[in-house]
Length: 177
Image 1 (cartoon, rainbow, N blue to C red):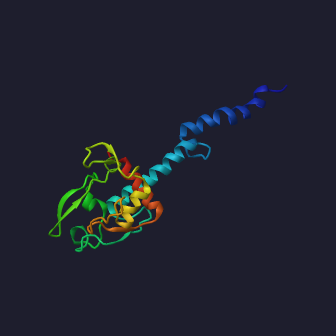
Image 2: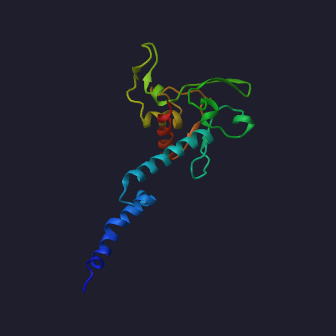
Image 3: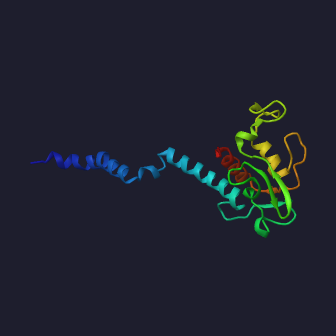
């Protein structure tokens, strides 16, 4: 006599119990057909890279981001390198500080500040140059120029970084409240 359970048991295991077990163990979140965690992980990795560049001047591969210019005396604490945080601060709000017996004025570089014009017309009005996008950011960070083409202060280093690192840094600055 045939046992009907013996015919259905392998199918139940494969189609019902195995997916439940994998889900409970967290395995399915790492599988390629589960897109959301992979996208989130990629975005988290890019933001972490941008944050690392901001605070350390190196990317996630451990490569130092090179630059030219900046205050002539070298980096913070007499080191030979600069970082964004050295002048703009941990919250990217900028300010005035003394660095190697020089007054350095660094602007607020949070995205929400850069994307509005706080000039003669008052806080909160749209920027005269349009959207503050990656190309405008590139002009400042890489070329040392304002959106209108005017040169930034010589205290601002001109960073030589890959497009990916620049994009990651820009994305990180967008997350700072």
